[in-house]
Amino acid sequence: MKRRNFLKNSGVATAGVLSTPFLTSCKANEEEKKSILKGHTETIKPIVICTWDFHNASAKAWEVLSSGASALDAVEQGVKVEEDDVNNQSVGRGGRPDRDGRVTLDACIMDKDGNCGAVLAMQHIANPISVARKVMEDTPHVMLAGKGAEQFAYEKGFEKMDLLTEQSKKEWLEWKKTSRYEPIINIENHDTIGMLAIDKNGNIAGGCTTSGMAYKMAGRVGDSPIIGAGLFVDNEVGGATATGVGEEVVRTVGSFLIVELMRQGKSPQEACEEGIRRIIAKNKGKLDFQIGFIAINKKGETGGYCIHPGFTYRTYSGKGHDNNPSKSFLKP
Ligand code: GLY
Image (cartoon, rainbow, N blue to C red; front, side):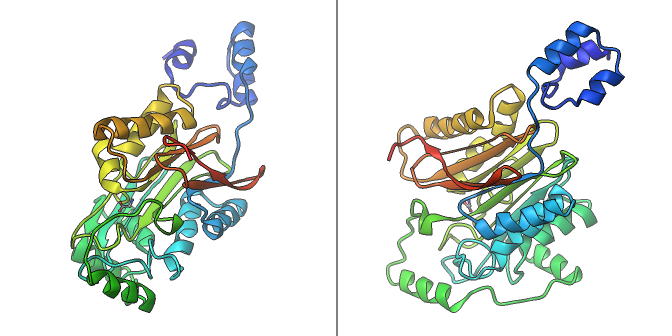
């Protein structure tokens, strides 16, 4: 394809993505060069963002990015911090169990080349994100579920452990007295961690990990390990990830939708807002659940949007480290 047509046709051929050496090395005429450079904005990289106020996770990911490692390493190491934190009762060890008292974990990971891996409803393994990465790198498959995922993890050297902590067990026994299943908006003020990073080379990766809805039915899987729903990355465009009631995110393939909206020219903020609007439209006014989306584009611009006030997301780059209150469809 001629360069002029490539620039016209490519959704990512924005000035912010193209480097000045690229412009001088090719045979663009002066008019073309001027028009490309006019909208030039500096690409923010490296950068990491994650759902909720997961300070330690984003700090870890930033440390990995700062060492020059890949976005893939950064998201894996970053979200692992929350998987290992037993005080976080919505991710990894210490997560709240299903209604039968079993902690079952879901996670997925996606790299710059569109490779991805996921584990679903896996028990006894503390770091599902790392097992998901092994699925991606060491198998011809994308998803492993239940016993198969667990068996694969043991084969890869992961340790078997009891994921149900005393605290989560105590709360579950209390819940069993009434057994009322009511997902709570902004439960404990956080749930799933979804993380997106751009490394020094400008490559994007993402990871998402959760113990799912507390006291869910045995075998229930939400959006978090479903590529396109809880997470999606396209290295030419950007990435998106979700938190909240997974069923609603799956029904609209939320993260894929947001990346496609960015491909069509929306900013990360506009794309997240449209993602939430689609869910609201499908629910015909019933809004007694929370969803939060975050997104990043190839330039390192970020956005976040949710249904109910209370969702926040972390951004960490050379420009600073912030916990950003997300705009919401329903006003405080
Ligand atoms: N977003 C987490 C879940 O629904 O399982």
